[in-house]
Length: 117
Image (cartoon, rainbow, N blue to C red; front, top):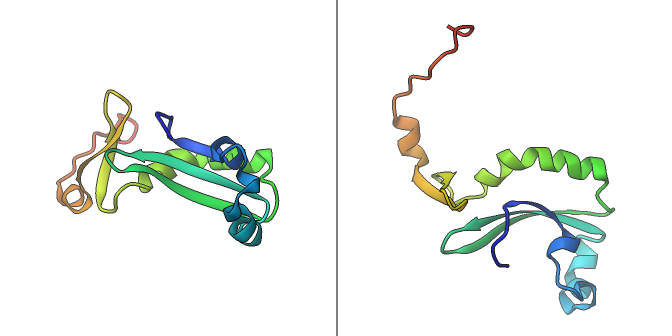
C-alpha cells in the first residue's frame, strides 16, 4: 500500500481485485470472518502499515461504520509501537517522539481556563 491517509477502511477498499477468489479467502476468511471486515490502518514509518482488523458475520451497517469512524482518532494512536507517544510531523507522517514512561514521569502543569480556575 503506497501513501494513504490513516483511518478506517472497509474490506472492499483494501482487498485485492480478486480477493474472493484467493485460496486465503476460501480456506480462512469465509470460515473465520465470514461476511465483512473493516480495518484501522496507520503507517509505521520505516516498518510498513499496521492494521487492526474487525471481522463480522454480517455486513457492517452505515451507522456502525459511522460509529467506528468516530472512534478512529482514539484508536489510531493506540496502534503504534507500545510504550511510545506519537504525533504527526509536518508531512503528516506519524512518528514516535518519547517513551510512555518518560511522558508519565514528566511534571505536568496544565493551563486552566478562567471557568476551570
